[in-house]
Image: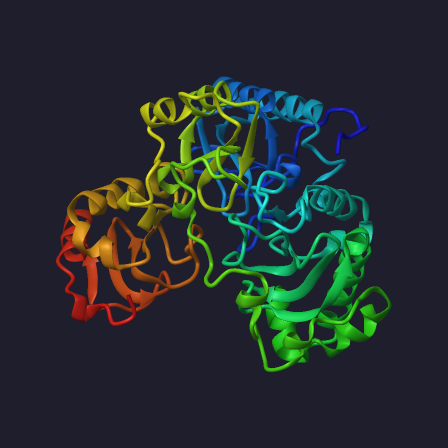
Length: 455
């Protein structure tokens, strides 16, 4: 992915720049100005980050940013707090490591999420790293696909213990054996609509055809959907099958019956989507005595550059995940103890894993509350509640960047206060409205089981 063009200053996306709008995604060549400076999202092919690169990225964030790094839900690294004068040296350094595309348009479409344990988990039917890397390169090099919406995403999963069943996306490629992947459209493994099977070597051609079909089909609608699920809801999968039939193989018989997600969890060997807690603190391998990786998580996916640098000294390779966690590949024996000393979460029982929060006041130009402080206060004071819910979301505004969907409990900030809603998305109406941060925490801590019918 290394660019051959000369160094140029990236075009920022800022509150004063008309490029910034709902649905915009930052990149290295399209940094976004937020509350603490410019945010640069680094897309790492297949989510495989050599330790030396992690160390250099950490040094860039410490020298040119505010020393903070975010782990995104799409398996990317985000450098925070970079001033305008730091954009060019950071971009040049990332380009030298191969993480910068030729231009902002080719960078923006490289939204490929890869199963983080690919090649490490003997229970997975396929090592999908080569497929993910080839797809990343094809998206960047295929100019016709650069018109895809900014958040349009792709997923490549080989199965196994760290499968991506619960990750929603626009186009999924899920391995069914060592040679073929199931192609499905719009959603999680259980939600996505099956289209057919394809060979691993055909994934890039299938993706290119799907991207073109999406652009063509949506353009014919009066209100073009921006995501694949919306287009499938409007038109079904028939038009896609017609366009891709030469590239597709028949689905297994059990997938040709019923509707969305029929038997999919059983077909792919997972009774339910995995929680990252299944991996946390453990070194999981394909057999007795084989311990190829250690998984460490961080509250809200936030860690310091110093922490990333220290973690890189414990391993030769880091894998990025969509679970606010990192996989340390074949770490040193004392890795778990050292990671714990760095503040990493190593146990699935840690209540902070139930909390999601955006950057809030200190990291977003529209934030009015310290969302991280509020969430940590909930972790301290609302233990019984957190033990019986799946997620509490603290959102700095109604947009819900950290989690736009519904949570068991959602706090939405506005003008320094919170509205607390149950089983709702950010911005939903609530009878617990206009609460100070302290009162909002007390409200959440005082919720009874009867008030949470969906939890």
